[in-house]
Length: 88
Image (cartoon, rainbow, N blue to C red):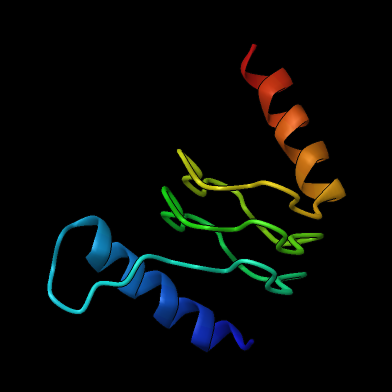
C-alpha cells in the first residue's frame, strides 16, 4: 500500500469519525505498514489488528480505542514505553 493510498483511507476514516458523507471506518487488519508515516493521524476506533507497524512513524497519532490485537510492532512498543516514561 502506498503512502498516498494510506492517506486517502485515513481521510475517509476522519469523515467516518465525524459522521460525514463518504466516511468509512479504517480497516488495516493484516496490512503491512512498516515505514508508514502515520504522524498526527487520527486512528481512533480503527482496526489495526495483525498489522505490521514496525518502524512506522506514529508520533502524535491518536490510537484511542483502536484494535491493536496481534499488532507486529516491536519498535512501536518501544516508542510507546519511551513516550510514557517521558511523560511520567
